[in-house]
Amino acid sequence: MKFGKLDRNAVQESYLLAKKAYAGFGVDTDAVIAQMKDFNLSLHCWQGDDCSGFEKGDSISSGGLMATGNFPGKSKTPAQLRADIEAVIKQMPSKKSVNIHAMYSESTDGSPVGRNDITTAHFQNWVDWANKLDIGIDFNHTFFGHEMSKSGYTLSSPDETVRAFWVKHAKLCREIANWIGEQTGKTCANNLWIPDGSKEVPVNRSLYREQLKKSLDEIFAIKYDPKNTIDSLESKLFGIGAESFTSGSHEFYMGYAVKNNIAMTLDMGHFHQTESVPDKLSSIFLYLDKVVFHISRGVRWDSDHAPVLGDEVLALLQEVKRCNAFDKAVVGLDFFDPSVNRLLAWATSSRAVQKAAMIAMLEPTAMLKELEIKGQLGERLAILDELKSMPFAAVWDKLCVESGVAPGHEWIDEINAYTDVTIAQRS
Image 1 (cartoon, rainbow, N blue to C red):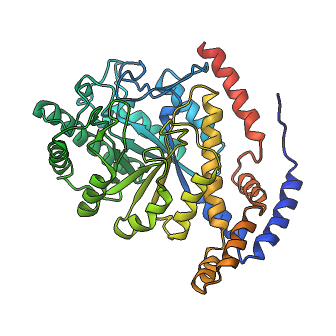
Image 2 (image 1 turned 90 degrees about the horizontal axis):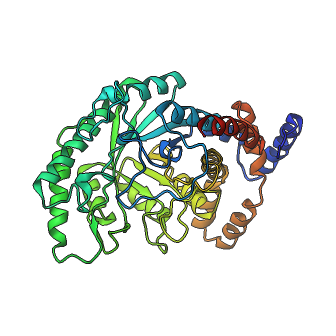
Image 3 (image 1 turned 120 degrees about the vertical axis):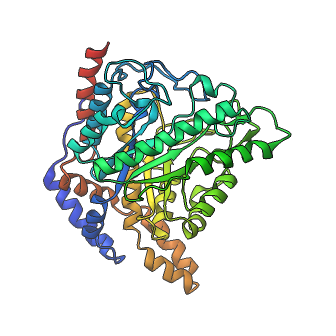
């Protein structure tokens, strides 16, 4: 099915009407469009290959990760993956970065690269490609899917051989992230997440967290220029095989991050369903200079569904706006879904998060805060509800047209045309 193109004159006419409507709330839509063009979204590479990486060319078989579905056309080589990413970022009207894991290293001779053999040379192709496109690169340590993580513990392992192995890996990742920042001229957010935990409740919780603290102290002993890289710690409530205990809990990392001035990564699927990630931000921003977000959609819990423009994502970006913290937020995606066209899911989620950011920027926050301070809570409630039916889509389409990106649903035809070719080539 073809979806066709939008009439550009209609886009402009709709925008002028929307501009007047928002002006009634004191919002300058032209200024919001300019601000949105500077909003950066980090696109995760693992949606394109179902989190397989290039170490062995196989899917992850351990570590609590599982991609469900077998839609054809999965990228199998670095060149294919980068081509797929390019097809997606062409549909994103704001700035973008690409987020990669250590397991996406590339050897010069095609041989497997060990976790503790990675060097900057193994990521030169990524850097050259990013510089060609004038985009940034974010990085992640890879602690899962490895022989040395099969016990369920890495940095918090009581086994010193295991712990030392992963400390070395983390140190190498920090060196590489710093180099990436130097080479691209764009700050590389370097995220550390471990799958450590146990299926049953441990008796000696303190031992594992003492080991984790010891590891982190060793890993972060060297300080790098924050212009090149920022370190962040990603917590998790529980994982498959670690249902009763995780070493890297939110409380553990919050304390360590604040004490050591390290950023935190908040993955929207890593908390209890009754917890509100947006509610945490006004507290965390008081103490930390940077917060990294991994946005996914948890159906039941941490199922890594592709996020859409819904209440949770919108509330997150609204809270960033209300905390006046867009300069402190590193916003990225984190999901893998091969049950549908990977690129359609990728682009849908990218645009959904960008739309959420734009809707947040369109909010007359100063007016709402003033109403709240004056105790005019009924008026605040009324305005918040009226904003839900404001014509934000007209502003979004205008942003897309100005950025040379397909407005409305046009992008679907472009992604489908690309996918049809790649599926035929890769089958």
